[in-house]
Length: 193
Ligand code: SF4
Image 1 (cartoon, rainbow, N blue to C red):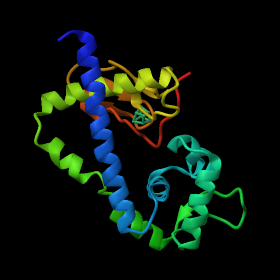
Image 2 (image 1 turned 90 degrees about the vertical axis):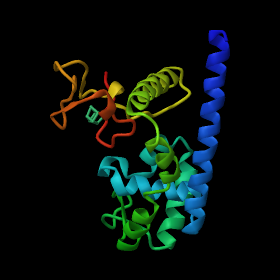
Image 3 (image 1 turned 180 degrees about the vertical axis):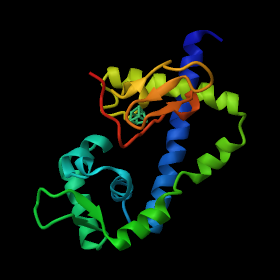
């Protein structure tokens, strides 16, 4: 098999995994009578800092339009799952108590995929994670992914800062990081210059 065939097969495999994840997302959303976008907004609001809990930032993070997020937030507010921190329209969005409960119930939406991954050897998974992080960074450089909150594109990331098995360092959290610890979607991420 030449290199080009291998690349194409990997892309095909990623497409199948992406489809399986989309089905899991749709199923989890349907169980809670939500749309997939509403589900993603709830999960973001459960973990993101205040600066990212705004319609514009959510649209950017989820790679959809501003009106799409406005509609989703409007529906979530009508369901009593989301509110604003204060009366001001500029105030960050927050989950209500009921919203936190629903977000907690949704947190395991990827579990079917994670269960399958748990069966695979750790060494294979570490190589896979490194490969996928490089692929995501490349797609972001090409403009195919607008936001990727990964360690490798973060201003706080110090690659190979330490000897041994945890060679990297997060300057914000002040913790060493092994390759397997590298984050793919960190809420504290700030883009490197
Ligand atoms: S802030 Fe998050 S993305 Fe940035 S280096 Fe630390 S763990 Fe990684």
